[in-house]
Image 1 (cartoon, rainbow, N blue to C red):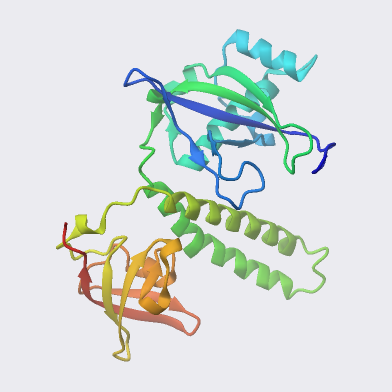
Image 2: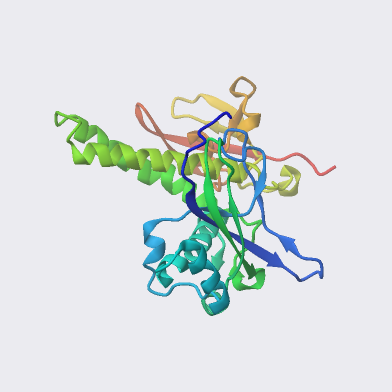
Length: 296
């Protein structure tokens, strides 16, 4: 048997958001990219590994008594309520982190039904002992098709948090022995976490259904799909189109929406000056024109 047959499964949980508004149930799922070791190219419910903090929430989610008894029985004799509800808390937390959706306060009083357990078979590169919970989608706040929160988080990570951590790591590395340097070790760990989150957000937003650029025809504000002409301080004029990560072609003037130039331009308008940070310092760009294709 290939893989690692004796790998111990990690505790995990997923949340099934059931939309019953149209009669037939519909569930929110996401597709994992081909780069994942576990369940690549598969559609999955939002979820992830249980963390220690999931056992210590001031107001844990409500799980029906019968379901709690079922969970405690699976966990073994003496399992506490906090350990059992940690799975439900994990499912809620991971759903919020992955989708930007937030359970309304009333949902904390609406039981999360424990409905299934699945253990990854031996021999896989990753193994999970996952519990699945069910809740009515009417108890969530947010639109599954609204990616504004994910875009805001990505911008904060790229523009604020990551540069700050890089600065701390560089400072800590200059202080000598790195093997016992707490600031350096923590900073490197945090950088890995940030980069992992950035990759996840980019994949998630890139898979979003993007509005046709022609929908903005006649608009002078820069959005995804815009063709922008801007000038640099020395008078050099450049023309770029803002596209998805997989469509990037710098030689053809197509730049990714997560590139520094695109992020400086997005949401600005024709005639605005925007700041771009470069290795040589801050550069001011003047937006000369914003164009979108005509509707077909």
